[in-house]
Length: 61
Image (cartoon, rainbow, N blue to C red; front, side, top):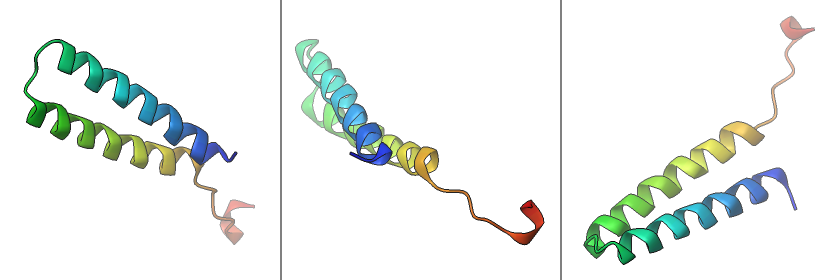
């Protein structure tokens, strides 16, 4: 499994747990859905940023 997949899988687990907890607390489903989508988007951006390979340029040598 690649680092990206592991990072994204962990993000999905965290978002799912937070959404489940919000539902148990009685938060309206629309707010749970919007919050989950925002967190998934942030997790996706974080996964891309953390696993992106650095470009080799002549000036970096």
